[in-house]
Image (cartoon, rainbow, N blue to C red; front, side, top):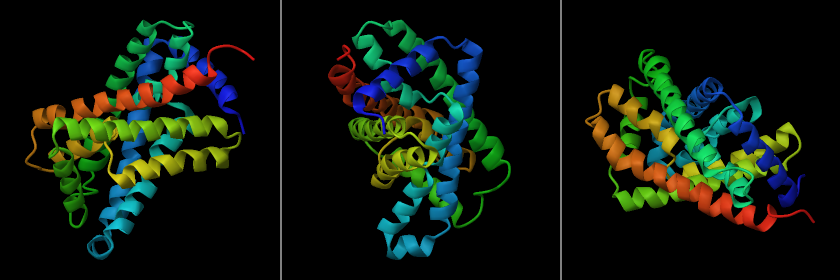
Length: 260
C-alpha cells in the first residue's frame, strides 16, 4: 500500500489535473458523479426500504443494510472516474498549503462540480426513479418520505455537524482508496468509511440532492426552500469543514510540505 506521504503526492497530482480540466469536462464528470451517488442511494432504498419487518424488529441491522448498499456511488466515482464535490473539498488543500495551487482554482472547481453533481442527482431522482415508479408503492415510498422528513427536521447546527461527520469519513475513504494499490483493496477501503457514515446517519450534501428531491417528486409535503435552507446549505457547509479542515489540512500539513 502507499504510505501517507506517498498518498499526498498522488493527491497533489490529482488536484493539479483537476485544475487543468476544461469547464465542459468538469461539468460532465460532475454530472456522472451526482448520478453515481444517486444510484447508491436508490440501491440503499430498495434493499433497506424493502425490509420493513427487519426495520421494525432490528432497526440497527436495517440501517446497516442501507449503509452497506450506499457506497456503490463513491466506488464508481473512484474506479471509473468522476468529479465529486465532497471529495474535492479535501483534494486541493495540500497544494494550497504549499502554494502549488491558488485558492481560486479550488473554488472554481467546487462551484462547477457542485452544479454538475446537483444536475446528475436530480436526473436520477426524476427521470430514472420517479418516472419509472421504482419507489412509488409500499414499502419503498415510506422510506423515501421518512428519509426526507428526517433530513429536514433538524436545526441548522445539527445538520452542519452531521455534515462534518459525513465528509470527514468520505474523504478518509478516498484517502484509503489512494493508499490501496489494487481494485479489491480500493473497494474495501472506500466501502468501510462510507458504510459507517451512512449507517450512523450523517449528512452528505450530494446524496441529499437525490434523497430529498425524490421525496418531493413523490408527493412529500416538503418545499424546495425547506430542502435548501433546512438541509442543503448546512450539510454543504459541514461537508466543506469535514473534508478541508479535518482531512485535507492535517494530512497536507503533516505529509505534504517538503521532500525527505
